[in-house]
Length: 239
Image 1: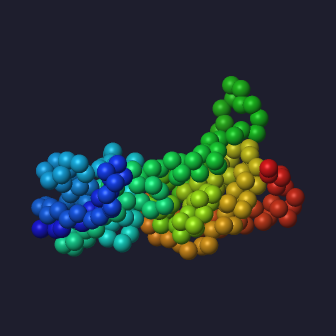
Image 2: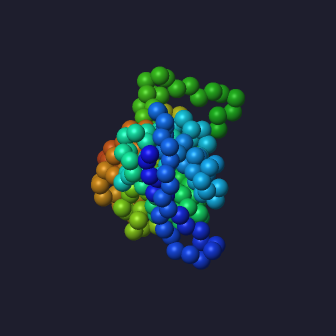
Image 3: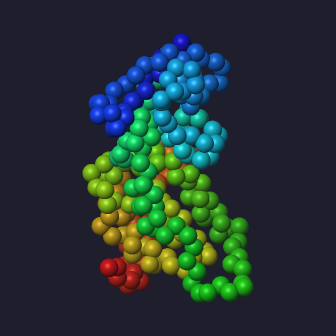
């Protein structure tokens, strides 16, 4: 019977954080998230964690499980062994137990303007995109904003103004979108002190991404695009 060692913390009662162990009966195909629900429903109704789709789509159940950031709904207990240690995402304030305040994460995402900015008023005209152009951004569209890359990034740990791997990779998604008309404005913002050149190329974000995306590679492409645009005088000045 696996032992779940779960991070517990309730800032409202003034006590220190600790790990609490639970015995969870395992069944074939059991995911870590299912084990957490077993604890909630049968052992301790005060346990707090996030989940929604249970199918690896929403990203809300990203946690630090046995030394690596993973989606709890996709992580098989059988592959974790008889001891499963679960912590919340790092670099964000713990609200309670495994629930963290995602506001900084989404604030940085919002800062890169994650929406299309057309070069001109579209009016009634439809912006057509070829299949070839769409394939250029396929890899980055698949990001589910789970926060695993953000929690694993050592730069985020030391610089709260750093945009983070999730926001920078999404920035490339719009820079490379054939329908977007603000590529150089985006590059100018992404290449400021808190952007792409703050990345230390540690590859943590690449290793933990549950969708096998490559934020580090995306940041590298943005660096090259930024330098190319800068040398040709195409980058507008930023405030």
